[in-house]
Length: 74
Image (cartoon, rainbow, N blue to C red; front, side, top):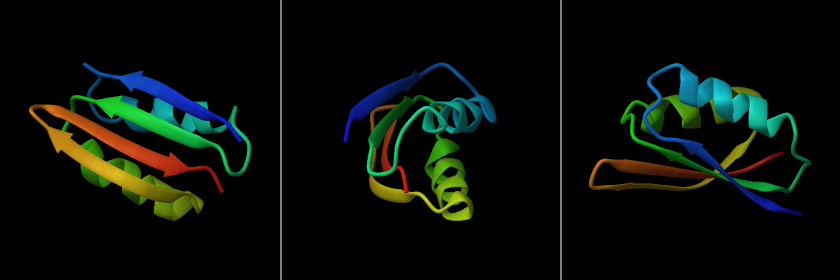
């Protein structure tokens, strides 16, 4: 199991979701991915993408214009 971080700062929709999708394709089941963003839309978009694709959202955080989503690849 690995823990990866994806820097999607300064990218606007739909690029954070596309970059997340591309990164997840390189990971194995059980791996953890932390996505760091500045677009507030990711707080809905990435969890929705996870539900559609069967991945598990472990944590979401919003702090001073930065949005962090931690997901488990399933």
